[in-house]
Image 1 (cartoon, rainbow over the protein chains, first blue to last red):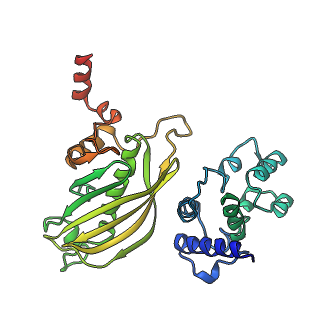
Image 2 (image 1 turned 90 degrees about the horizontal axis):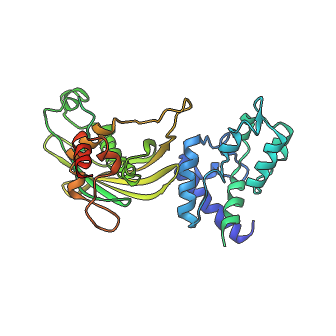
Image 3 (image 1 turned 30 degrees about the vertical axis):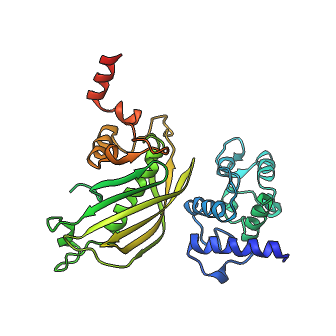
Length: 128
Length: 185
């Protein structure tokens, strides 16, 4: 891991330890936010505040966790994200690999998609 | 029993910080029922007072128009017990307020010593229900009456340090202020 990425990872890890009450060693790059770290919807608001404060960045609503797309009838049919919705997610979240999700785009699967590494990538994209 | 867990504000700066006090009295029911034989204020109620201090600070930022709910207590540490006759001083600080919520930290001091500290998150509820009704968690007049009991408009300052003016949403809820405003116009 390059030096800057390692530093960002350490700070993201501290944010997640404080926000989720998990142990340091649980926060690995591959760990998923919901499945492995037990994040609930309100925790994402907490995490956004901590990332903004730690990195002095602004995170617009819906950019990191696009609830508005996943709850929009235009992009979701019968519990699955449509191809139009997937395009929206790709635009909104270029820092996330959506390949697996595209294969089975049930909205319920989305919660398990975001990993710690995705957060690190996102933060890095916001840094000057 | 009324759900008032602060007695009054002693300092209030819009969008920034607030200090409130809570003096315990042996006549309060909770001091007799929670730990029989030991009249200690439960930590959950200390936390409630801390949350009321910070929650009103967050709510004031929108002129009491947004619906603010306690979303999460990510940290709460208690260092001492509060007994009848003790006065707790809660100091809340806003770290960030966004469209969807706010991050605050609050301390409780007793006799100059740190008694508790917490990190509390608030969320803004959607203003309109799915049926299209406007959502109000409190009756505006009841809220306004509470704010006056808490001396908010006596000690409050806006972000520029000027005395806090009565918020339009609160003034509209008061029939006397409404009739005075109508008489002036």
